[in-house]
Image 1 (cartoon, rainbow, N blue to C red):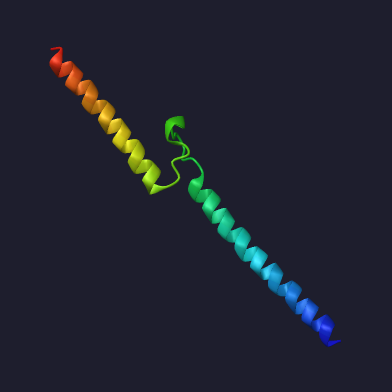
Image 2 (cartoon, rainbow, N blue to C red):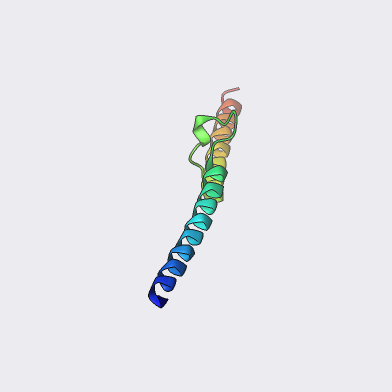
Length: 73
């Protein structure tokens, strides 16, 4: 009788943990979902570090293009 009660309690605890895990997973998936109108080039930038790196790359590209235009004006 005690073993059955312990088993039921264990199952209930696991079900609660699973529910919490699924809720957290849904939050993460929502946070990583692409925004409306988001260009393909930024999809996959899931962390601030990825975003900062991409911004630096774009900035360098703009700088080089401006420098080239200035030198060839």
